[in-house]
Length: 202
Image (cartoon, rainbow, N blue to C red):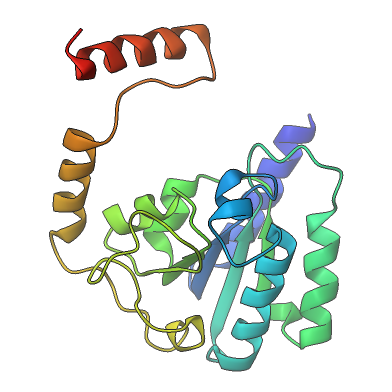
């Protein structure tokens, strides 16, 4: 029931943004290794505040910022309330929106640009040819693929990736670095073990 209400609220927010230019900030987990060890922020709260402050100072008046909660965030922190209060203090309450739901691939394809710390969700935007500005250390943060200047400039000049570059990057990554599988289920672990053994030539 709660999940359905969240999705309904997300759909309502997204419906209101259909004819508007919006930037997307997908939240990451504060305890994630990528935030703790590969970002300039102590946690995601600081990162979100940094992005909102930059947006308030430099984004065009007709631009909106959509902040999406991480689907695996089980903390008791009230992101909706925090973002609402912060946006009010910054004078951008009407242009900042929060959702706890929605299809990330659909949002990534529709956004004017994605801002993230180093989330793998950026690859969805890059695959769709959408501009990406990353604020931390990310494997995909390479010249021609992501925005190379400060985020303050991203709001007015979101540069898309060079055509064909993400496809080439992904092919190299899949061929040289990645293996199929995961740790979220027994079948995913089995696939991971098999893939690793194949990669090692066992």
